[in-house]
Length: 134
Image 1: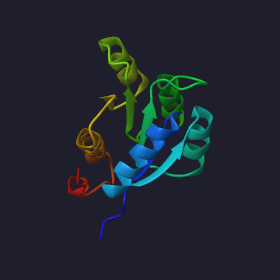
Image 2 (image 1 turned 90 degrees about the vertical axis):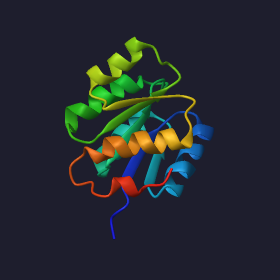
Image 3 (image 1 turned 60 degrees about the horizontal axis):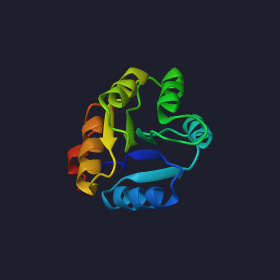
C-alpha cells in the first residue's frame, strides 16, 4: 500500500481552500491548508510535505515570494503556483522563483489532479502517483 502524498495548500480564500481540499482528498491526497503565507512557512518548517500548492495573490506577501522563501529552506519539494493571473510574465516569475508548475484559475478538478500528479511524479520518493484519480 502506498502512502498518501501530503500537500500544503495556501490560499486566502476560504471557499477555494475548502473546495481544493475536498478535490484533493477525494483523489487520495492528504491536505493541510492555511490562509496566510506566514502560516504556510510555519507549517513547512514543522512538517514534511510532498508538494506545496500556493495561491499567487496572498495578503502578506505574494505566492512568488513565498515560493522563494520555501526554496531557501527546501530545494526539493515540488511547488505549484495557482492564480487567475496568467500572463507569461507571471508564469516566468513562478519558474524563476523555483516553482515546477503554474495552474490557471479557474481550473477543473481533473486539471488540478493531473498537474499535481505530474510534478509529484518527478519528485524523489513518490512512487505510484499515476494512481490518483481525477
